[in-house]
Length: 190
Image (cartoon, rainbow, N blue to C red; front, side, top):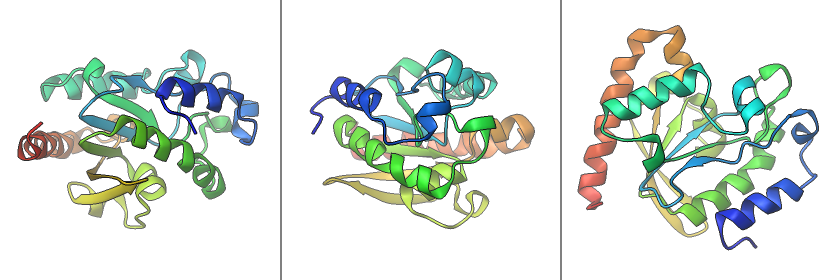
């Protein structure tokens, strides 16, 4: 029933129906511009994010900031969230039930932000939020359609920054994907 992101964050802080909240240090709600044309969705907070309470602040987040800057965007200009708002213990992959339980909160975030374009960072974000089973290597660079409570927007899957730290050669694909995002925004007139 939240009518704003602030109300949604308050409701999520008060919500006790997620076991991950019991083991996390902080809720990691989101960052950036809530009125942004572009929303980036990652998988789950890591150790740095859990400690600070902000998504993408560790080494992967610093790389994301550099990638955004190279494509002409600033962190303050985009919306950044994770599928899960609490870190799974030991930084493990989220269980399917955990991801499903968090989808309602993410869907409401999308509904309130109303981005023109969504960028899913990695296979888990693509699978859990967009409902696609295809692996990220085959899916990246392809446009999908996302609908959440009447809000529709094009969604693009790309490699997550953490994977780029392990496989730097894939940065070229992410660069191409972000150029595609810029083109899509121009097509949409935003």
